[in-house]
Length: 118
Image (cartoon, rainbow, N blue to C red; front, side):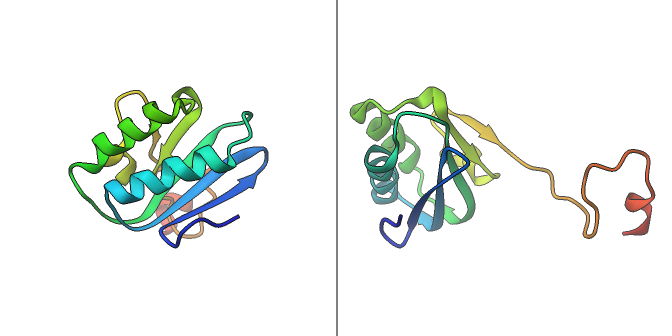
């Protein structure tokens, strides 16, 4: 499934994943909420991935909150991922920020030498 170029939506493992690309503006917020309204099937979680967001317009945070509220979308199932998620997340949406793993390390090692090798 694809929306416009700045917003890509796809289902994986029963969850809706939305990938954002480029600058995030109030218009992008409208695209995101429209994609959720169009593609969300009422089950699973919604993950909005922000790794490819280049800039965040200050008014876009409020625009996203207004769009989500106006469309009655399930904020309790929404998660923004990545550090840019902190900049554009309305207060009622959770943000997941992943730690960068060292190259070659799976991140699940317990007391291994991975951290010393890289």
